[in-house]
Image 1: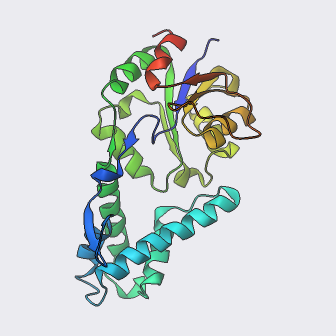
Image 2: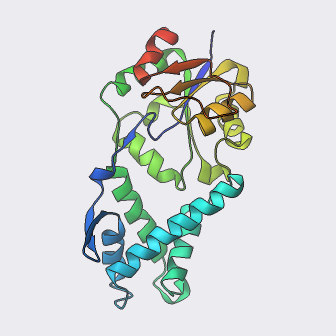
Length: 248
């Protein structure tokens, strides 16, 4: 099959997210990995009555609520909306806090999350070879585009992509058609001219199939497809397997 473009999922496809690289904090006698310690350090200067434990709980519960809402119809809950919920759970009125504090918290959270993502060493050379033959794009379910861009820029590969499309900017998450259409439109290609590469069958493979795009499913452990999802055109164990498929 001849393609004009290759589109990639971001987390656990292009980059690996390692929770063990997240900051450690002590909460109620437990060691947990969370950005809450850094958020608390910023927040405590303006709301000294907020404990680390309360900050951590509000962060976790705001994430759970965002995940619950996303599961209803795949509508994205962007970071500013989630952090609005975070403030409400702490009984804080953003209007009484310094202007820009919410953005500072988002940027602090973003910085620490980004440190936990890493591009495997063999992915960069593969992407460089692919970029010589195909138009490349990233299509990611994530609540804050700058985090995704930061990671790709830090790893030195952002310039290889003609489009970086993140669900917070589109409003919809994979497998909804809108986010795929946005990426294809920016690339100037049709679905039948592109290959989508991702690790989640229920969002990456299904989403691509629903708009007539071939999919390469990264399935390192050889798990079976979820019920109701047709086999993808390709099933691979590692991103390196694309070299043979795409002849680079």
